[in-house]
Image (cartoon, rainbow, N blue to C red; front, side):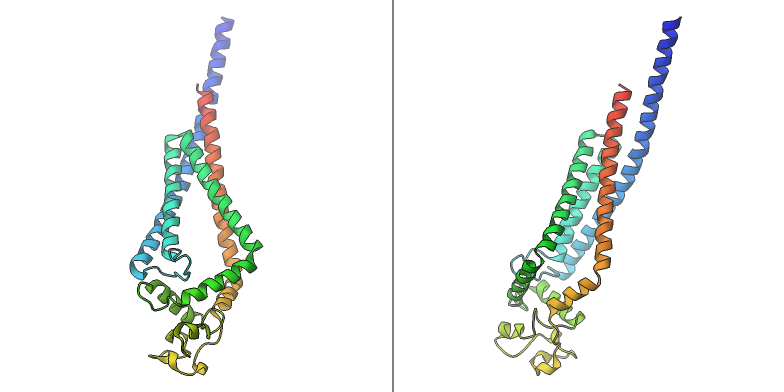
Length: 257
């Protein structure tokens, strides 16, 4: 009778461990699914905005002549599609309790996190070089203003100069080389009117756009920092969920084997 009772006790102990492991797994499973569903919906939103910008504004905010595809619309489309893909893998991995998909989600999210961290470090380490290159590239891009097939660049410069009350990259004279004349786009004018860019320099904005936008970004550095921190926390949360659930799946498989 003794051995049978011991066997029964051991059996119930194993069933209890299995039940606890399954209970923990279910809790993490639904949390991870909810997290990735929000992640996926966020990607849908970003993708939608990118497609809307591409359809209505062309290559909106394409200021670079070296990287014409590096527009706000294209960046949003690529980012949205990638976030959707990661969220989808996470959702399916959570629902199916699939170790392979959970690891894939973890690796994809970790690579994105490391890439962002590397870009941030390089940006702060080479700020001066990036400044010089950006100004040189933007000045080259001015020559595409108003030309065929560059509606996005033209609109972007018009919006920047109007909203930030600035003219040119480093000086309003940047436009003189573009037009081969003493004139600027109408968006540089203190008071907008047709062909006002042909008037005297006293009627134009004098502030350089590069420095003006840079100062605006520095003034809003806190908001940028908070956004970056929130993004990093969301990614760390996703990594934690993925690894926790992976461990719980392994534990449940071992306990219930």
